[in-house]
Length: 372
Ligand SMILES: NC(=O)c1ccc[n+]([C@@H]2O[C@H](COP(=O)([O-])OP(=O)(O)OC[C@H]3O[C@@H](n4cnc5c(N)ncnc54)[C@H](O)[C@@H]3O)[C@@H](O)[C@H]2O)c1
Image (cartoon, rainbow, N blue to C red):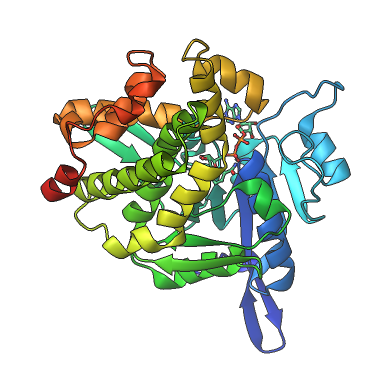
């Protein structure tokens, strides 16, 4: 990674220490927890500026105050992470271009549907040698095929982009319960190591693997399996059924990832981003919870309605990812290879009832792996 520009170099006796400036693009539930983790590390580590800038999509709270002002006055994101202090060195900034202009390292953590617009606004507005990492789970589907969010960032902004995924329900990490995460990187191990340093904490153990696509696809696809797990819970089908759905889901995740990118490694599925994230998302997590409510209502209340009612501004990722995935499967004629992914989307749009989640056994999932 190129060292930051001269103004970021501090002379310490004979030694020149480079100081990287950090900006977090996004300030939802996970974005706020990420800023807390990073801000505590920039205070301890010499090679980073203490201040962490966090771009906030501005909102007016019911009190009439601006969210950014409240974060800067109370050091708390009262809407998306109430009750948790972010660190005094976190500065909320509602101006996207201003927030990123001096950054050497950018952390992207918004719901995936907003990323294309954000990238467009950032073209020509960031330093040329900036390094990025995406914590975003989801993908964009284009006429030419699916585009992972890290690829969208790399292509639109012309920068290197790693990913960080894992069994990371934000509210649990916020209260410092032990968990793990996986950084996926392309070539530059030193850059990956720098990201590991920035996120690592005694209660948040981060490791790096050279498999961006594998790590990112795990994080993205497990949200679709979590929707299936929620349907199972909503129909009180029990633990064996849920375990079966998780296993089938994992098989489809691996098969799809390897069909899309032959470079994806089997071992990635045993990292935190793989099986661990799948388990936690199918046990807890908002996708499972809202899908459970959908099934309990017999599919009669839409996901949009339930999302608005149950999540107070937070976004569901699994339903839109299931839709995007379905488009990819249609484009490639792969529906029969991925019966669980296909069924989840058809239930979400009301074409099938929630009970259909266990009614596709005529396509044994082992065929999926054989054909991958
Ligand atoms: N929350 C978690 O537990 C968790 C854990 C791991 C990964 N993630 C991933 O992190 C990403 C961000 O999720 P989150 O939990 O931080 O967000 P969130 O769902 O809690 O909050 C939604 C955010 O989107 C912002 N927003 C609303 N409209 C917008 C617009 N038009 N343009 C830009 N931003 C807008 C809101 O201000 C808010 O910051 C997602 O991809 C998610 O899958 C979340």
